[in-house]
Length: 260
Image (tube, rainbow, N blue to C red):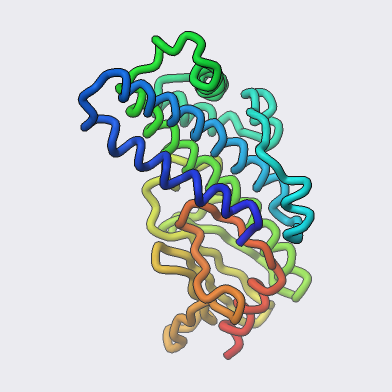
């Protein structure tokens, strides 16, 4: 999907492993050591996800990637809000789910990371931190993915509009919405995201669920066709990242599904 994905995909299973295994460890020092590593990984994951979002349309070749894209620095809450253009609805959602303000949550992750990396105030990190690491990782995954999906959908809509399609309507589980990032309560429970548009003559549908993406001309006799091509055998907006490079290829693939 993106050159940065290899870094993200390397971090995520490590975080998940720490979350899973800390509770069964008996030695307190080992628990705190694993939790410390978890905070470091979570902070790095946030940084890589943010760099990925900022470079979401950039085609970066391997040579430039190795030379210029190195381990990113931590983001303060203010920097993160600016990079993602975090909405108030997102902050309200995080506060409601975690009982912590969004900015405070982000800054606390950075503080825990710094304490862990520099062995300062390490006594404040315990095995029970795994619950916080798990909660923050899960909820920030929802947040980041919802923002990526919205950005992806807007780029897809713009491309399709140039091809003559119009009157776009976005849905989550058949409920009309304007964007996913301001409907996080619905998004985290949703099983599908879809949109309908038309070309002035016929209506067309696209749907993404946990099994992949499909498209069809809106007609009871028309079967859904899997959105796939020679470069991407399976599109999914339900894994951990919701923005694909190759917008033109993605849209052209949808159009083929609609017209064949």
